[in-house]
Image (cartoon, rainbow, N blue to C red; front, side, top):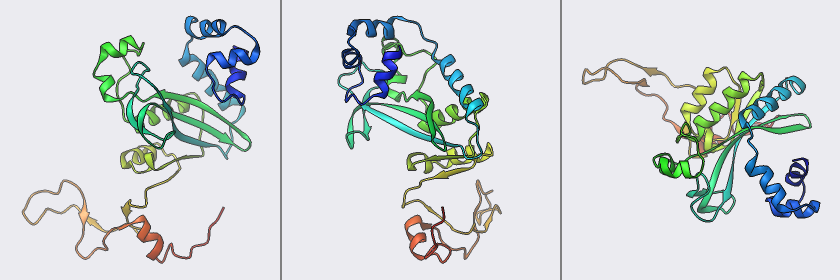
Length: 247
């Protein structure tokens, strides 16, 4: 196992069993059997890693990072594989997607959790899932729901994040941002330039509609400033134009 971990951390272009075994001069079958036949408790391993991070690397400068890894695959047997957006190839491709939570503080950084993104087509075909050894409890969830599960699990094991950060794949999901706010978590999110909103919170009302029906959600009061895209805000809003960058 030590040699396998070294192989994953080295500069080999391919990190499968055979090249790792060859680089250490051991039979590939030995490494394959170690990974495929031994019974690993992945949940316990994640818990142990998170407890170590919480105990040895707690800091007021800690940052949590949500991100995905996309692995191109051939065939239809790999768990969760389907044609979907593949960042590794820059196009829609046959691939597997996993959601990860990283932890960084000063010069220390590590991954503390990850989970498979199971597409709906897989989730609805339980026989296919069983053939790929996917547990019955694993079903399709949006990637943002998976990210929240990773976050809550880390927090339950004592890991704290001064800040979280993530790209627009998560930053454009309002429900996800609201869920982090409800947990009292500070975050810095990337959003698409086409995202719309206001620099200053607009005035809203929940009064009944002119038709007499009750309003289902707050709406803008008359003569309120219209929303703008982020691109327009950066170019035209006085609060943002010419604003100096600060570290």
